[in-house]
Amino acid sequence: MSVSVVLFTSDLRVHDHPPLRAALDSADSVVPLFVRDDAVAAAGFATPNRNAFLADCLADLDASLRERGGRLVVRSGDLATEVCRAVTEADADEVHMAAAHSRFAVRREDRLRRALEGDGRRLFVHDAVTVAVPPGELTPASSDHFAVFTPYYRRWAQTRLRGVAGAPRRVGVPEHVKGEPLPARADVPGVSPGLPAGGESEGRKRVTAYWGRGLAAYDDTRDDLAADATSRLSAHLHFGTLSPVELVHRARRQDTPGAEAFVRQVAWRDFHRQVLAARPAAARDDYRTKRDRWRSERTASADIEAWREGRTGYPVIDAAMRQLREEGWMHNRARLLTASFLAKTLYVDWRIGAAHFLHWLVDGDVANNQLNWQWVAGTGTDSRPNRVLNPVTQARRYDPDGAYVHRWVPELRGVAAPAVHEPWKLPGGDRAALDYPDPVVHLSEGLDRFRRARGRQD
Ligand code: FAD
Image (cartoon, rainbow, N blue to C red):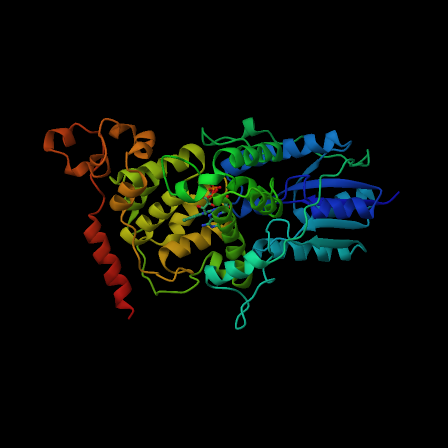
């Protein structure tokens, strides 16, 4: 009887899963394997929020496989060693997995391929699993990747996506290949209290609910901080509990005005991935250096701490930073504002902010996080690298009633909009009665410092 191994990584689902489908087509039975890779923990990627979400995803994947007569085999250790061990135990000929694109993932895949081939086995890597259009598939005439989103999106939108593969009916797993107990969310310390549940079933429910509830108005409401009207599907896309290809096909079928704007936003994931695949160093180094001499942990520790804690004295910034800790997620407009505030108004190294986000975000993802941070810091792909978002005017526009601030900054619940966005302007007695800090910097001072710093290079 022939056996194949399916290695699950960031694709924790049974619907539209090309590696699983290929493994089932190539063998009589399969070993669905997930390795809790020591290298992921050592690199700092295995944070409490993502570990807790992952535990839900593995439990749900195991349940789906059991419904189909199989189960998930979980192992811990070095990925290549554990895959080779499972291959030997199962006497498998082939391993199937999804392609990934970060430098870390590419090296890991190379190492695994060498280990397997040394042992006479083969690794098959399947495209279009964690992205809708894989990196390298679309390139401009003069470069190996697109550096500007709009022309990329024009080509992306015309690209024919592969069809969606259904979930398999039956998954036979050899009895004698055993795994360890599944990790449990309850055993993970330090998790945000409002962290949502993970897993493919949850993700699919969320999509269906969103089509009925939010998609039609997506374009009008996605920047409204208090409405919270975006899909909140990012963690599901990050862990692959939803297939982006299936999501895009389904969104296009909705035939509502919001669908196109939503699909365009999903395309940003692919855009960032193709940038990172072509320039892996951009995970750490400036994609386009502005020769900044950033303030650092050493020179700006009090400002950085105030930002992390949500105590900057700018209500919309503080609301967002507190939402991040409470939910492990932050609204996109709030990510833009808090990142601009740190990198430009406080002129602190974007890497410090990106690391804090990566620690807390349940959707924390190297390509999306590092390249969005660079976009905001003006070292990435933004064509207006020196624009600075004003947290007061932005708050007036995107939180006009102050409802978002009131939700996350209870000290300001008694202050109505528009004063809630500038509490330092309240009359002396009212101001003194608030247990809320003064601004860490005047906006004009921050702006001058940033302009001087960026001007110096010219
Ligand atoms: P929706 O508005 O419903 O969008 C649908 C999907 O499109 C999202 O789930 C996401 O997968 C994708 N998407 C939307 N906007 C972007 C974008 N700008 N870049 C890439 N993909 C996008 N997103 C992450 O998934 N992981 C991150 O680590 C991350 N870090 C960010 C850091 C900063 C400083 C900024 C400005 C943005 C970051 N984003 C990140 C992008 C974006 O903020 C989130 O994807 C979005 O807020 C998730 O909420 P949602 O699922 O409701 O989005």
